[in-house]
Amino acid sequence: MKRLKILIPILGIVLLGACNNAAPTQEAEPSPTNTLDKTEGQAFVEDDVSNPNLLQVAIKSADHSTLVAAVQAADLENALVNAGPLMVFAPVNEAFDKLPAGTVEDLLKPENKDALANILKFHVTPGKYTKDFLKKFKKLGQANDQSVKVEVKGDDVYVGGAKIIASVEASNGIIHVVDAVMLPPTE
Image (tube, rainbow, N blue to C red; front, side, top):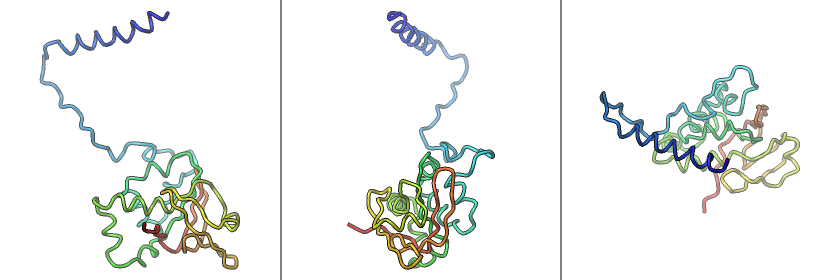
């Protein structure tokens, strides 16, 4: 049995080598390039049966079109569809509008992809905690390996200075809609 396990891969290599040495009978097809197809990965699997995941919820929200554009520019779509659970602190479009003029447009440029990804990861925390449960925390560890301060003011919860204004459950976590873009501390 041990010899058979060794012989099968060797036979495959020999056969492939023989096929590669055969004279071509027609013009060979060009080999595929190693570029990332923006339709590859779990984020692009269509599923009308399951509960929507974090990315699908955000895409369906008219209030989060800027956030979705940023996630796409940073190539983070597949991160938002993994099993989780994840908490996403999702700034509404108006939150992005509060940033200095030109900031969003500049961050969406390909040369700023890493900076944009860092900011977006600062809005993601492992776990799935309700707004009320978050009141027990002083800070949260974010996906970019930094931490963000949690503050409670009356019934309101602020994360990184952004007020949670709504919460939406998803199949792989929870989206806490926030009124501001949280910027990670600079080193």
